[in-house]
Image (cartoon, rainbow, N blue to C red; front, top):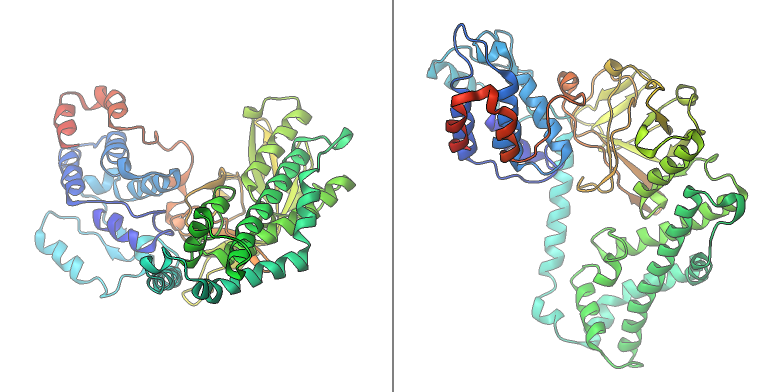
Length: 492
């Protein structure tokens, strides 16, 4: 179990969302906690075992709810009453390696030596094409390192007009091309003054107006920085400290703070500009549909928004007004067929341009991606709505899975909670991810990593309490563990 937890870090962010420092101290602590839990003729307290491992030993290091759900799924597979009592005759590690049911060291040595020389993603419950995602991530890291090495720090700290002109001209030309082709300054001037009035004054329309205002500030910020650099390079303006700082940042292939403070986009300046321009142009189309009163009746692309999570919050507020209930009484659902979400206070919203990672969408639901499958597969349109608690989910729980949406490929910021009922799933691998793709740029919105179909039942909400620190664990398990608690606390 400890080896699985550690080696799963190879597949970040499909395995874990980030690199966690699982150490031999965690292994010793877990072994000491589990020693009195099993044994012949004894019934282990699984709630205590799962609670201590999930909140104090391993769970104490995890930082996201998605990672904690993966850990819970692992514990419910490998820490069962039969396994702890030595009765798990048919248990297999990763679905392939039979687990020894004795205390003999030789049995475990034989099991370890039977492992293949190269780890397979299937051993960790991941999709078979997870290796391709690792290779892509490694290539991106190498490219970023090469860009950093090509720009010495001492050279970027000093102003060299010829060097600035040679290395920053592609970025300056890109911005000028974007200004002309999209009329960005005109869109920015118009977007800053947009406000919904009368019957158009709804939470969703106000959200679009705020997005337009922020997009306008993005355009002004980029134009101010690149315009000043261009004038300095031509000799039409004196070099200031702020311009030199922005120029050095761009020479290092990093995004200036004045831009990233407004919107956290891609880390490379050229990609950041393209992504920002794509959203500015897309939001102009959103506002035209707002003025026609047909925004929510038309398909929406989350990749055209700067803050897609706020759209769901605005839709939630608008639904609460229509249903005459509190916001907290609503929950998010989605379905592949509009008829499955017809009994909602407001019309469901169609979301397009989603891309699935780690699985393939088939007519019967989600199926595991083969080893040679591409990293991303197009998703059919999804219909999203907020519903009160008295309306049933669109799909039965045993035939569906809820997947939260993230804002980026690193899965650090969540866009939305797990909606109920994505689709009937025949088999699905962990690392499943969805993202919104648009022409010219793409905004990544992956779903959290999910274990394989063996983990489906373990991922249901309310499995056991989330991590709240070791001190809260003391109060939660004091009565169950009794006198043995003091020893466990010293180990933790």
